[in-house]
Length: 390
Image (cartoon, rainbow, N blue to C red; front, side, top):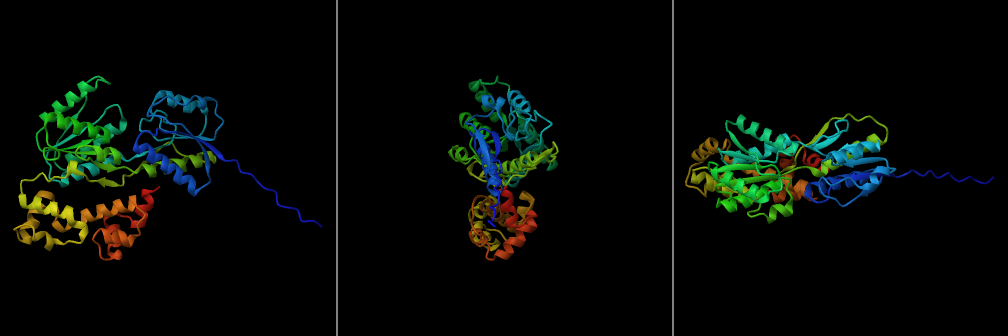
């Protein structure tokens, strides 16, 4: 009796529309996160068009016979187009124009906390925020930045543009005048890197020295933009990859017929990229400033407090007292802080094994690094790396 062959079952590939701009680093990070998700699960067939932020939805979407949508719903036109399809969808915009959809966004409270703490650690007592009230995420970052500083006993001056939209010259002039009037030195957070670059341009126009008079930090860590800025711009690193991955996972559940609550899924930032725009210590104590600069330049070479003491004419007790008074922590804690920030960066941005990460950040023993990292962050190095990549 002949053996009957098994019947082949063909599983239809999911058809997913991606309405995310490709014009900035954050959006491209979202797309990379989506790709990472499908590589670990069943492949999808994507429908993606080259577009800018807030562009009209593609004409083909109206009659499209697909399975789901991942979108940055930034305008009412895109919102209407997505809703009219009747398809499962996940929103990646803070605009929240379709409250019935689950949405994934960066955790703006954590972003503001990182920026505020970075400037506080540099000894600033005067602060400013430069935002863009058109965007919810900018308003949220401003609110949380101000709250964090007030909790530390400081006020913050916020810039709210008065120039008409599109009047670039008037806006640049207003921004330069506002910066010129700020008490100096001042630590300033820009709502995102493009705004940060505008602040740096306005400082140059106003004849203000960066970072000595105005230290500037942005958000998004758009590497090309930050490195081309003059001086290079420090920036908070959001986990765009993780946000894209989370959005894809939610859509997968929706397309499988599972319930997903229309709630916020907030993704914590990865850390902070320090560049020249905040490379300053706003304190009058020259010895402490010299010690901090030495630590930031050499912490990952395995230095200790004894090495720091050889750079300043102070006893260990006096140096520690001055650190505590001005910065709120000890020289040893400053060394560990710099090392751990570098560890986070290497875990997030490279595939280096942990022993090489330890070697490149001044830790003699991998075991000690693992214990310290877990104590300080609440995560193991491997869990942090996994979270950074979705």
